[in-house]
Length: 514
Image 1 (tube, rainbow, N blue to C red):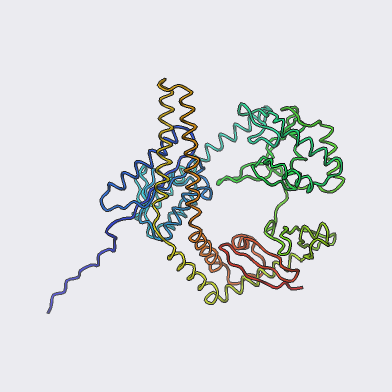
Image 2: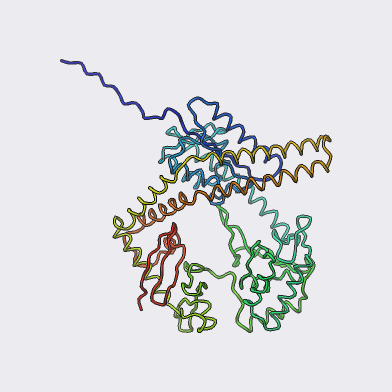
C-alpha cells in the first residue's frame, strides 16, 4: 500500500507587509506638537528600517477629539485606504490615540479584520491578529472611554459650580463680544454698532429676512464664522439676553457618551445672572423687541425638533429652500420659500408631506426589487473607475513629514527661548515664519485630500447601496433613520415631480400622487 504524506497548505502571505501608522494629539500645546512630530518621524524610520515592511503612509490628526470618529480627516482617509486594499497592517501608539469610544473602536477594528488588516497597539502590546485581542481591546478601550468621560464630567462640574456662583457666562462669545481673561465678555465696538442697528431696524418695521440680507452684504462674519446671515441668525440675535447685559446659563447640555449637544428643555437646571457683563442695548429696547416678536408671530422657536425633510428640500425652479407649513386643520405641507412669500415669484406651490413620504417608499421598494438591474451595475462602474484612477501618491507622506518637521522646529524654538538662548523678538519672527509655513502645508494637505473625490464618491455610493441592501424587505411607513442615511437632498421640479438625490450622487425621479 502506497504511503501518503499530507502536506498542509501554506498560509497565503505577501512577501512584504504594507504598513501604515496612525498618530493623533489632542491639543495644540508645544509639548503635544513635539509628540506629534516625534511620532511621525519615529514611525517613518521604524517602518522603513523593518525587514519585510513597506511604508504606505503616516496618517496624522492634530488637535482633535478622540471621542468622535467623524471629525478626524486622516483617520477617515486611513479607513478609506484600507477599504481600497492599500494597507495590510496599522501601527498605533495606544488605544486612546486610536479612539476613546468603545463602540466606534470595535466597529473600526471589526471592519479592518474583515478586510484582512491587523492593528498593533504599542503601549498595550496588543496585536489584533491574535484571536483573543478583541476582548483585550474592548477592556482597554472601555478604560480609555471612562477616562474621557471622567475628564468631561470634571469639566462640566467646574462649569456647574461657576454657574451656581454666577461666574460662568459662556464658552463662546456672541456676535458683538469677545472673551477676555478666559471668562469675561468685552464689547467689540464695530460689531456692537451693527447689533444696535439690527434691533433698531427690526423695531422700525424691517423684516428679519431683509436684515439678514443687509448683514450678509456688510461682509461681517457671524459668531460661527459664516459669511451668510440667515433669518435664524437674526432671530437668535434678537432673542439673546446677553445683549442687555444678562446671561442665561446652560441653554444647552452635553448628552451621554459620545457627547452631543442638546437644547435644554428642562432636563437640566438653568441659571439666570443679571448684569453679568457690559450691555450693548438697554433692557427697554430688548423687551420691546420681544414684545414685537410675539405680536407679529414671527418668533423663531430655535428649540423645535426638525423633521427628516428639514433643510433637504430645494426648489428646482428658483433654487430656494422649501419650508414646512401646518394649516389650522392640521394639513402638513411643504412650499417654496419664495412662493410662500409671494406666489408670483415662483410657481412651485404647496405639496403634501404624506405624498413625499409615499414617493420615498415607492423609490426604496423599486431599488430593493431591482438591485441587479440598477444598483449592481452602478457599483461595478464606480469600482472600475476607482481602479482606473488609483495610483500611489507619495505627496501626502511628504506633506505630513514636512508638517511634523515644522512642528518640531517650533517646539525647539520655544525650548531655546525658555532656556534664555533666544530673545522674544527672534522667537516671534521665527514663529511667524513657521506658522505661515504650517498654514501653507495644511492647505496643501487639504488639496491632496480633495484630489481623491472619485474614491470618496465610490465609497459614498457603496455605503448607500449597502444601506439599501441591508434595509428591511418591506417598508410600510417612513423610517426616519433610513431616510436620513440615504437622502442627501430632494429637488422639487414641479408640484407633481421630485428628484431624490442620494449620497454618492445617485438620483431618482418620482411622480407625486395627488
